[in-house]
Length: 91
Image 1 (spheres, rainbow, N blue to C red):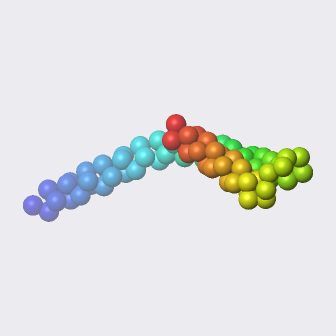
Image 2: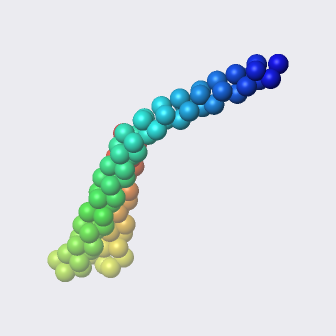
């Protein structure tokens, strides 16, 4: 009776080790892909933020828009960047 329980325990542990090994082999590729998506999304968002800052400065200097209108343009530009980031993240 003890031999039967010992055998079952050994097989259970072996199965757990096997599954853990499969997960360990599969995870690095997924993690790398996910990290790249995060990086791409972050880069897109940062680029858009910089673009929005520059657009606001240009808007204030070159157009006849009010400060509030320039601010709204900046918000709209930043929102577009957030949407780009979501698109990258959910590909």
